[in-house]
Image (cartoon, rainbow, N blue to C red):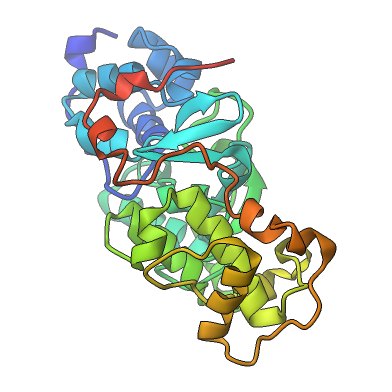
Length: 313
């Protein structure tokens, strides 16, 4: 397939991932798998899958799509264990690449659009960017828990979900109808707002996104369940109950962190501190990426080309 013949344009949707858009174009233009589609265009499926900005830009040029919105929604390989999303650096555990998550109600709506225009559902089923972030556990639109599956093993399946979501529209509607409501957490609302570039609490906005997530998990757990509770030991339901840690300035060390907690929950007054906490473990664990500068310090860097996101194997 000649690059000049990629017509008509299947527009990129502002809430989807770059890989979702590429898979939908494959279903639209060749009614086949994304791997075949990309190779026919002279693009490398693996390089595109890890978000190489130059490869993404080439796909956009071929399709006649403005690359800006696509690159903003592209998780780019930063190191062997981290990814870049715009200005943010996220470790693997926050956006596991082997996980595929979806809202059955969203996909059922995608299917309904496909059927209304008489097209293959693979052209319209799209993966929302917000689903890729592990702290987001429910659909912000339908308030249903996201369903997790193993992602497709390669680029040979049709559509972004391929065989990982074999359910038809009726079955997706059943899954949505049987699911218990899941309103989501303040943290996931903050993440969605942050990705959409909507302002949030001053302190959290001043931190890299990963640190904002860690701070909220640690201090939010202490505020809701006491100073000795560990976030990873909580049930999913309890993790969703955490309050969002607001405030205008960050706390420093355990004593300041405890005082910060008490400013939101006056009754939280630990009388005995664990040995690890006395040495500042709480504060230290809030800084898992302490070498990443704050957003304000990175504003100049953000204006540089996205091609700086290098692939490290």
